[in-house]
Length: 297
Image 1 (cartoon, helix red, strand yellow):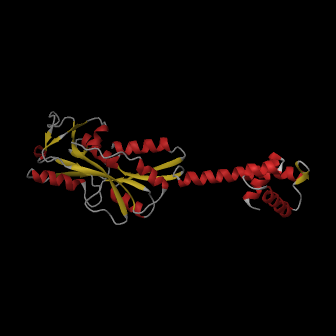
Image 2 (tube, rainbow, N blue to C red):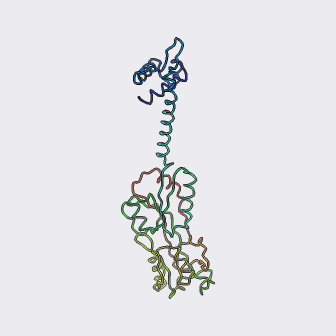
Image 3 (tube, rainbow, N blue to C red):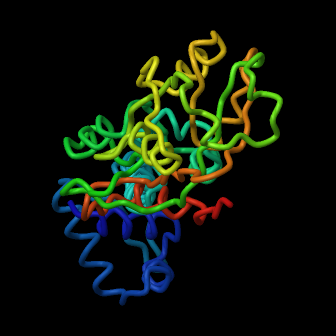
């Protein structure tokens, strides 16, 4: 039994006239009659009584009609499900983000718009450091990830740049530099730094060292953590100062103030990484929602 047999049967059962049913289906009357006979032969019982001016359902035909309509409805649901999956409207999208990108507007906006535009798709998020996110992408454990890229893109990944943001300074409230509107990098000589290392091939510590080197000194590393929130908490505890992406200023922590830097201010890039050649409709739709890079001064 083919789907067209079911469709032809339902049309004839609703019209009870071969001519009208054939016109509705866009076929000739003889092919319709032949398809109905083939269906009846397969079932083993007549489905219609042929009358001079139409057709009448038999007992077998009436029993078959309800099930036939369900078959056609299920076929339409199956087609719609395939269309939605093919168009990236359903399924699970696994997205990672590095903790330093947690407060970046590109990240929060992408998540928000995706949830609004594709309500039937589930979004599974994971926070980790950039190197670990890249590893999970390559092992197909994630579909996309917001990372802080370094100088080299790992083989097998594509990176979509999302711009750069300058680092700002996080200080304990009572720090001697907290009263300044802008803090020169040179003023940080001898200050203990709380740092966190993330990125693919290039860490924040490397950026801090470059900035300090241009001012003629080497930064003093006091504490190190893999998480940016923990870093800010350590600053609040008075364990040192920290440089962090400017978007971290959205994180209000008691005992911490943020100040822009003067001098050789490092800028840290953000990118979204995907597997090279990934053709997933969900991934394609998600990437289409990523806002253009914001140029930070």
